View 1: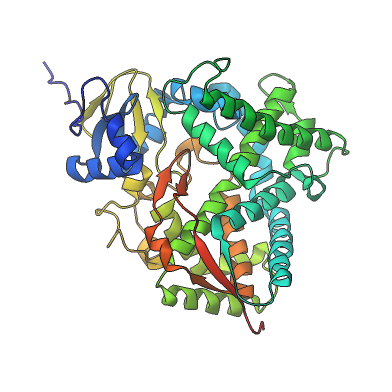
View 2: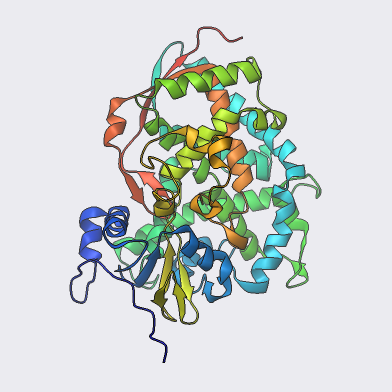
Length: 454
């Protein structure tokens, strides 16, 4: 008889409540990092659900690609669906394939030229607006400013510039919406009709955000078809799964996902980049030299993206150390083995991207912020599953290239106009894992207009 594979080890836990008390004291990221370093690449935690955490690239590959049919976005995503709905992020099976096929053309390389032009035009307006409002040096809360900027970019690029007014929403409401996604995805929640403080917040936030979403959809319906925006494509296309146009609810779910989550990846990447730049004058100098040499003071276009090699390395290194998503989750359909460890049907598995991104078998000096990690000679031959800022496999984020181009373009525009000085307080900023990894406090950055532009 074959001896069954062992169950994964776990850190010490309390009866009944498992590791939930540690979440309150340390937070999810600290719990996972501490457990990974002590127990190895596969371990389990009990955080309102029994989760098997996998940090090794080979194990992550099995979950997301090698045996992906056994690991699905099942009940684990029910709480998330309560907020964002059943869009391309949460759909499964044939329905997901049909929706993904419908949306793919908007993110193909052929469409990126036009999208990049919209990104650059929006960045120019926002950054020049900052220059005009401030005659000299000024200090900003980087995350707040980057959220405003990237929300404008998403609105203009995917929905159309004329919808900027309809898409007006506060920074606080966007943050509250993301908190709801995280809260609803973490275990038991009371029925919506129970008047708890959490449910009152749920109804208040959803009413504001959905009001914006439906204004955007209604404004999109009033425009003639064929304007080239993703919104127009969604409104006027036929779903291959149902052979009919998308319903208002289906449109709401897709626009909600793009609107609320679509801006967040770039906003967080730029925000975390500022925290990593503290004390790194060498990186700042190299970025300025490349931007000045490639652009010469003009606005970037899609054709400049592959030329901004060092900026892309800086962005990739930021995503390695502070990717916007630290982990994902899947329900296990049938018993399986991952890296010699047993997982059972009904378990939850969590590919732990932050672990893979810091794995000593794949990264030299993995805790150090070093854009050279992504120099061509170092990246060549590296296990592709050791770097997963947008997940991987067939469920890789549909907007990954859009986000990378957007981040490089906006960073180039910022560096063209401003010298950046990071407040020393960023050393105390800690990552907090909600649905995305956000800073636990404001990230203060001083921007000084550059005296001369070539």
